[in-house]
View 1 (cartoon, rainbow, N blue to C red):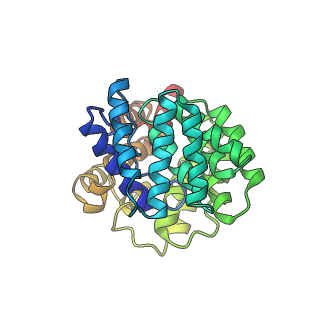
View 2 (cartoon, rainbow, N blue to C red):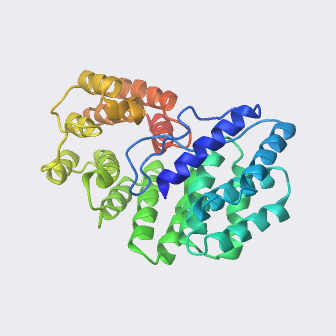
Length: 333
């Protein structure tokens, strides 16, 4: 489902370009591993522009949704995008109708679609529309953990980490599956990290590892746990070494792990981020800068840390957890 959502959001980015609207994020069709996705920072496109351009995009969405051959999932994704667009135009009643239609089209998963698309669309700058759309969805499904997590992501984009933490506590209290628990724990780890609650963040990232079936699914929380443990003055290297001892670290993002374990240099990591095919697909220069900064924090090199976090801010989209964390790190240096 995640790949299908990313594909359609890529199509939407093209629609925005054709209608004269600029996609706010350069890496529009990539996505950082929120719970079990690939390790690749980025986000869905967020529209910005004049009312005329918005209406042009709305007309394009109307044409797409008029097609009878759309699958239930595709239709639900496009409905979620149109609900957002309608909210931007102040047409809240129509936006709510699209959310209701999503419930009919995809009864079991509509809220998951909405929770996946809204944070990315919010990244274009209209967080208010995204939050209103999520509020409308929560009226239909009160307390839904996935919608609460999506709200928290939007609040973290504007650095309201305390508000996000409260929402994630609510999501955890209402979780009904292992996946909902992992996702809420993962994002609560980020809220705690940005609030400098490092011990709690490390514990959240550690708990979010439970039940993940592969290194690909584990690598994101493992690296974030490392970052939190560095600040909490725990044995970050020892924990990372134990949990990656049997993994192949020659493929991206294994090179980041190798570097943090002292098995490679910062220069080698930067080269890998430039030339490795997996790294190029995943905007590897973004996490490489951030984790080189974390290594500098571990060594007490504040100047090097500052330089790398500034570089990470420049390289990482604003919808990326790496961007949020880099900004928070810079405030504390």
